[in-house]
Image (tube, rainbow, N blue to C red):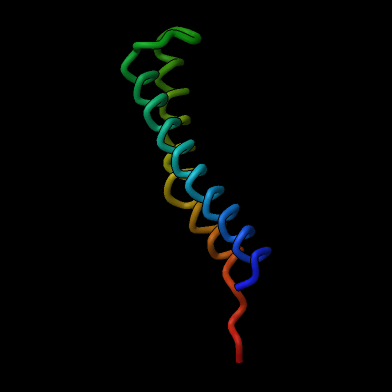
Length: 78
């Protein structure tokens, strides 16, 4: 592996893990909104926003890193 390939792999690894961390923060923020601890627009609108944020965070945490990994997978040699 060349140094350029290694640097690219490190950047991709960082991007995938950053996506998981951001997704976890979205999930936590969504649950705080659902619980009513933060007031954005008032209840029940905050709960709907919280549910949307939790779903977006779950996607960012679970699905998006898999999509990035599949896109960045090394080509198979024949």
